[in-house]
Image (cartoon, rainbow, N blue to C red; front, side, top):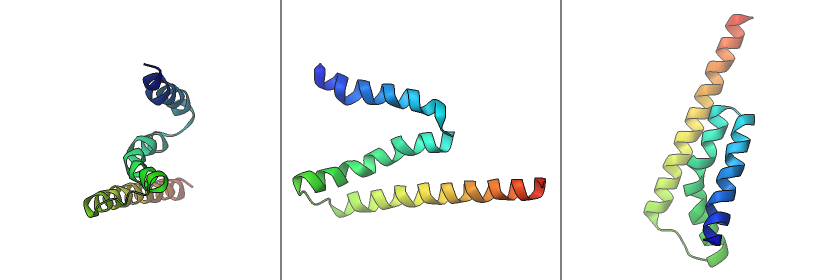
Length: 84
């Protein structure tokens, strides 16, 4: 029970508080990147090397998030340049 409170309860509480202060895109990056970072933490702390499918999946998510972020910034820049 205590592990569930510390592992799930407190992080979600902090996430709910923080989500009020950032954009929607920034808020969604944390849950999207969390599964990518889990194998990284395991590799760093337990010296377990991730398999090729894990690496490929992580790269796919990173590329998708990066492309989405860049496209969003480009659209925002176009809106501000046409409005000015």
